[in-house]
Length: 347
Image 1: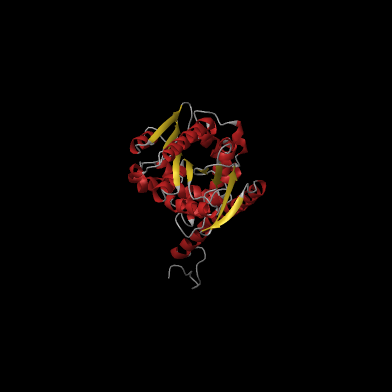
Image 2: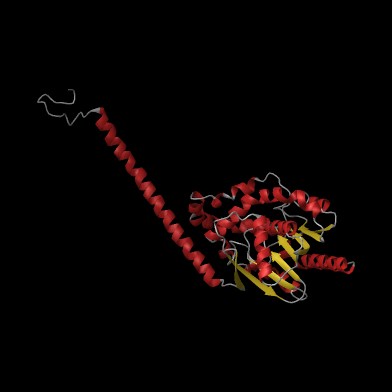
């Protein structure tokens, strides 16, 4: 054999090709193995760091209100004021503190019973993984929660994704909703690549890895850019510093945000044909220069779809119209209630 020397012993200087190949493969595998171990170590360290930040955020931002166990959800909510009830539903990525920091809760509580929920997965409310939290499913949850706290009929204000929940509640439970204020909402399905791009952390397994490791860090880096987009062209108001962004960057809330990004177009597709059947007073309000959701393609179109609706476009305001123009949103609330009262007086 050619790998034996002239004494019949194996030739160590000229080993067979398969032995050489195996040696090279083992040497090549060492750097790959080391790289995988290093990557796993980095991801583990990131996960531990993000877990620490999440727990710290919850300690620094304790619940503002009360809890109720509703359909397996530990639902956090606040109540302020007295009078006709109005429920405020926040948008994607947000929580109760968005409305409290805006000043809208204080304005409305002067003459109304104001109820604000942390929707499932946001703030201090849980989001069980045994169901898909569509706008309709959340509407049913809010309806059950209102019944438990003794509210049989209320006006609903929804901002952004919260407007989708408000519409679903009005469509599914019209006897519960006396009027609607819809702010900066997405009402009609259209192609949106950006929604698909940010929905990754909602995926099982791989998405879980991303939201515990990379997503919170990326969120902190991109936060200033996101704020400019959702507030623009208006500047971010000083009062918004009270919004606890560290709560929004927890892995648990990132999953809710990603899931709702994926569900926004289906939510609009599931409800837009029912808008014309609504009979309660509807006031639509939006920033005239919203850079996230085009008011012409959404709010103006909704005004045409709901005959008894009115539209208020706020000049110079962007997507966060309740933050930059709370007085304008409060005026929309007052208009809605005046129309509710007029309907009641007419029998």
